[in-house]
Image (cartoon, rainbow, N blue to C red):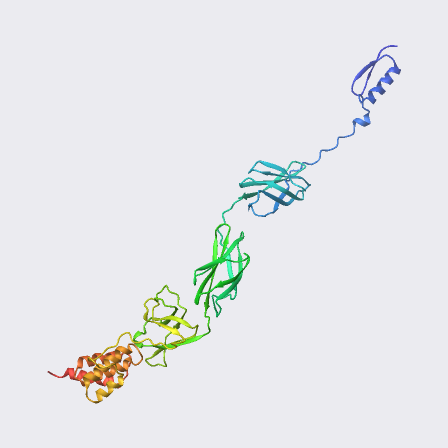
Length: 437
């Protein structure tokens, strides 16, 4: 048989006979060597679109801010993530100690524990999608295992009173209250300035003191809360102990002792025999008040225990006058005498202003002047001072001492600007002065 040449779909092959040619063509087709016309005309499937959108991620715990401080060696994080196609995974890394790992979950994720280096830890959580897009969020975690505690505790006394003072007839008092601290209250202590005693309370957050011995009079008791860092805070209650029942004490204060300008006239009473001073703590104080507009002044204590006391007067809480010791209830009245007593002549005793009137009526002008001068010294700035200066001025005029007369009248005129007798006397003095000599 003559040789023939056949051309397949892709490769020309020479065959010897028709039967072999048919078998060879079938074999090439089965092995993919040759393609039928139908197979060669089918177009390829198109490629899918490329995903370029990054996921979104946020950290919600332990904080949504960019920093967090802790005293723990580890931290747990959680948050959310999303993607237009889907979040494939969430991972984390800590720049502080070069550790990393994977979170649990994707849309809502969590990290149970991330170990921390001391100091700043830059922890980054990253969301990944299937196309390789990523998005991260960073939280700086500051780890300080031993932070300095500079915050003082708080403490309050609630019993027997929440006020600053308390009075009792007992020789002891019990206290209770509360205390708190940002870390913790380590202990609560107390001290009594009244007798120099001190001790510890039972409890810390809620504390109590069963019995504190009291000195007679004021006891300044301070309760102090302490924390482990050495910070402290105190609260003070002044407890006044008056055992034996109340006793009253009253008396007068001479007007020569009174400061009428800017002083606070006060009588101080101290327990026992003491030297009054600004640093000594009195049992009590009593204001000195004027008696119904007169030139007399008085004070009163209405509740004192029986005992020995020191009494003193002061108008500035610094200089004390008229210091006296007395025993209650033996001496329920004590008067503060004048700071000075003027005496005219070698034997004449102090007399009241009415004696000056009697002397003036008898024409004894010098005696009247002496009596009025003494009355003015004792009165000081009392309400009768202006009248006394007026009477002294008129008496000096009667005695012919016109300069002294005018001086006293003008002094009285400051408080009695419309007094007709003063105005008339000054007018007469002007006419006398205008007479030719």
